[in-house]
Structure formats: C-alpha cells, structure tokens
Image (cartoon, rainbow, N blue to C red; front, side, top):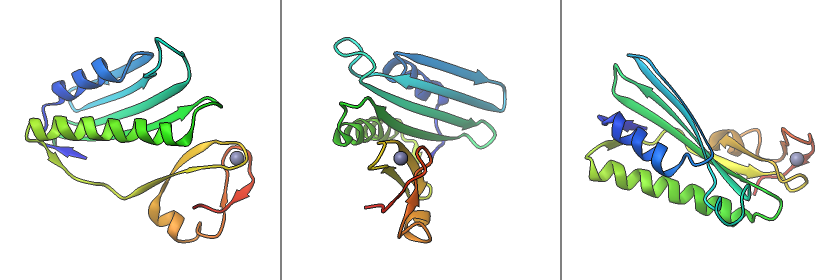
Length: 148
Ligand SMILES: [Zn+2]
C-alpha cells in the first residue's frame, strides 16, 4: 500500500513501463482502478511472459494498493516469473522513495505453483501456514499438492 501519493505519477509509471499489451483505467472523483498487462519480451519472444498489475486508488484517503503477478508459457521458468515480480516491486519502491510516498505492507502473500499443471495462484501467507499447510488444492486441475 502506498500513502500520500501523487497518483498521476504512479499511473504514468504503470502506463509507460507496465502496459505494453493491455491497459484499462477507470477513473471517477473518488477512485481510480487500473489493470495493466505487460510482456517484457514482446519484441523478441511475444507471449512468453505476462505481468499483470492492478491499481486500486482511493482518493479520499490518497491511498493506492498495487498487485502484480507474472504468468508465463510452458517454457518460462518459475525463477523468471519471480524475477519479473521482484523487479516490479523494486521499481515501485524506488518511485515511492524518490517521491516521498509512504510504503505500507499489507498481509504477506505467497504465490504457489501447482506441480501438476503449473498454474500459479496467490494465497495469503497465513492461509498457507494454517489449514493449507499439509495440502493445497489446485484451483485449476483440482489435484492436491504440498506447498513448499
Ligand atoms: Zn494444478
């Protein structure tokens, strides 16, 4: 979560750096909601990796929440997906620091990859540590697997 921000700067960053395949932004005086898709390899190997980011901005509190998840084709290594997500976080963090925005972390999230079908999902870490700990049911193929 980012507080005390200039949302136009954040929006400009997302549109310029993280929206080369799709962008939809809805604005009204109280909220801004944006969905952006980005393929970092578009020029070389299109549709290899897609980074989806979502912006949810509340004007009355001047607070923005950002999510980002990378998904990839069959050839894409898990490491590359994680690296793309980490880069996104680093760039947003740098933008926040450069502009004196306040950074607050929401609940810790974990991204799990199903070992059978390679589908990736985001879970709250506390879910994974609690009842999910022994086995998690894949939301795509329905098989059970143990989170690492
Ligand atoms: Zn699965």
